[in-house]
Length: 211
Image (cartoon, rainbow, N blue to C red; front, side, top):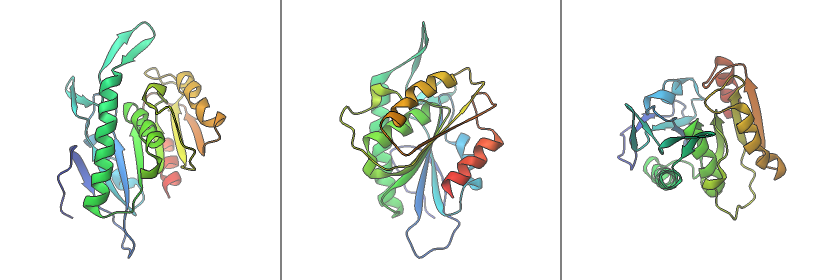
């Protein structure tokens, strides 16, 4: 499959399943300081029906890349919200253009880790017409990135977190995820005895969710 040029750099794994229907698109968003190769390392383990695009964030960040800068604060890191909103625009444009370029089904699956998970959740809530399902690994819901007038939707959300995560604590994640429970979203949350990462058990649950 030829690799079209889009507004973000990305790695491509075409669907490995033969079907008369249009392929399903899965887009990966990496965490801060990483790159498009990170989540792509386990792309081949995900269901074969997906055409997988692993994106790269646009901001240089200490030898890697970020969707927005982070600054030290009294209570953890402070997010550069204007930069994050610009990245949300870039992600939306990427999704729309990828659907057209690859002639896929009209809704995509998002899979994000850490900062990528935060933006995956925000993208889904702000643009439910574009999203089929979303997986948020070791992230949280940042209300500063959410449109004030949200439309109810039945999109399946699956969030995971490590009980030993010191980068984004599980308590912080759970506190923000109360939004989904209080508003009756189709939301699942599962924790694992791991730090800020993706354990084999967590990855297997992701695969099951997608299958």
